[in-house]
Length: 214
Image (cartoon, rainbow, N blue to C red; front, side):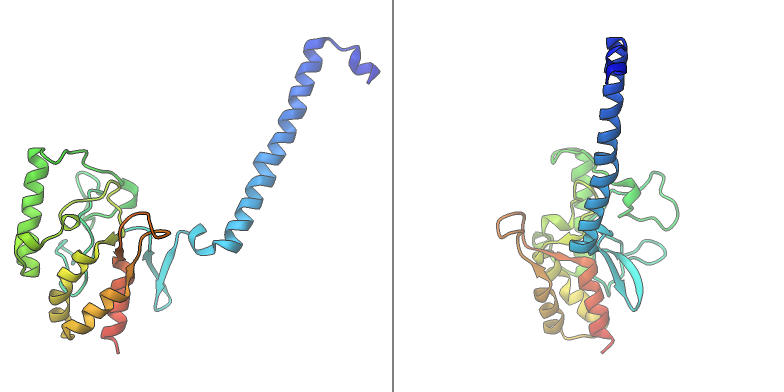
């Protein structure tokens, strides 16, 4: 300590700062991350690893991200429930990329009266009316509008119920059976007050495949 006191003040200050840097590097850069990773892996293993969903021994997606159920040309498959429209797509879009691309999460930033937005909604309404054989007045808003991220994995129960007759017909299943499956997959509001009731499209479609395989 006597030797330290003989050093110039500026040197002693730098030494003290370096010691503090080492201490906080160990605490914040090593101990804290290891503790947090350990806690998350033990208490929240699925969430910490991306909430991945497996089916028949293979990872088929994440319950936190939407995915398209389309053919090779991007046409929606009638035997599956369809997610919300997605703007998460590069421009120009490469072959086989029709939305729900997590590397291109984005919104259109178009207001509700923007002509381009109005035209897109009207076009989607026409497509859904033809695809699901329903009048435009019965098409819910989430079926024709993309989420802010473009990656919303959920749809409203109204949207899911609207698709039931089409899915049931494509799979030759009773409408009531498919409708009950939707009801079973409705998730309530978070802690009872946040958000709206919703249906996870990926989990619903997996359950649908399981039902068809019986």
